[in-house]
Length: 114
Image (tube, rainbow, N blue to C red; front, side):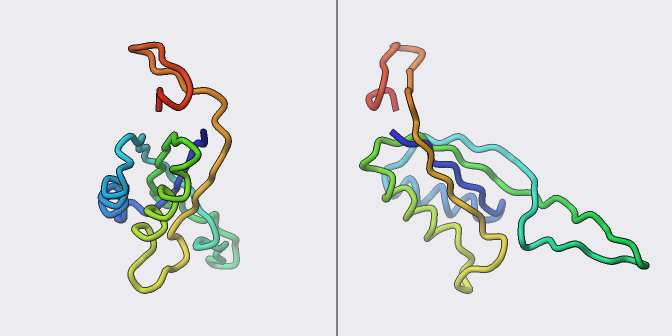
């Protein structure tokens, strides 16, 4: 099992959700987050360094069985990338091991709980 975490542009959320549903990935968690990466460099204003503003983003968290990792990542990659071929700030995908998953209602564990 893996936990896929994707940080994407807010305006791409609907396209990513539709792509995930089309790929039969229907269980996701969405959070509003803010941060900055390479798209925000330090600026000099009137001779002083200015701290970059935080940019609003969306964080998706998706627990998947191992055979759905590539399907999920491909759907996110295609839908989150800006139509002009991609640009700074399109986001990132992180894949981490998921040790255990427990469905509270039925107490099922492991891959069946996802």
